[in-house]
Image 1: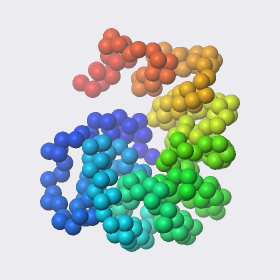
Image 2 (image 1 turned 90 degrees about the horizontal axis):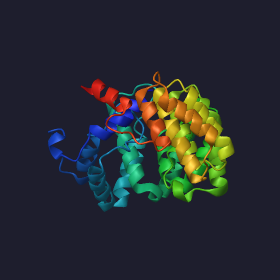
Image 3 (image 1 turned 120 degrees about the horizontal axis):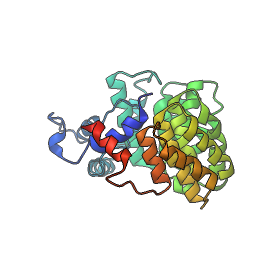
Length: 300
């Protein structure tokens, strides 16, 4: 897995709303192809859904997709999802990556309107044909797709189980998912917090932050990732997820606060992890802060 922390930072700075920065390529005249062409600009070194598109560009893509005939979009999705088989988690070729990102963006836009394609997603998930896009499609369906992702956690294929974890963590409409459904997601994701794949751990950390129903179970596991995960980016992410859990349940735990405080004051700790630890504790980061000075020096 690429350095997650780097992706988080670069996504903030690389893409703005200035059209002059986009690739100077003549766009096709077909309405759908024109939209897909614009999506290609946001293909990254990751086959995860492209959720870091600038708001202005995403709004334009969103509006244009929804303005198209639904049958046209469904026909495209069906043809595309059946046209390739991603070799997850290996590095895909550009064409595979482009198709996957295109689909993930369309899925996130259509959301629950994807329900008519449920059979297509299940067929691709069950047959191990294009389980990557199938998982993202079910995830975009939110509550309608979650039961199938939970069921996929018992699939004999390890890769499908891993993608089910990623799909559960990325499910849309999380504010509507609570009670017994959220409890099932929490139970399903907790064991994957220590998975050998950093990509799977990342999604499990994100998912626990969104769907935790029992902080007595979630908080200690997230704190373990904060302290012990070998990936700096995942420790960074775990701090954020832990803060979400504590805020949601209005918990102020002095023991956890002291551990995070020690991290923020540890000169041997990664600077960005220390900054996130300070944010966790709501400690202001001033221009004279040694951490901030070091970051500025590294960027010179």
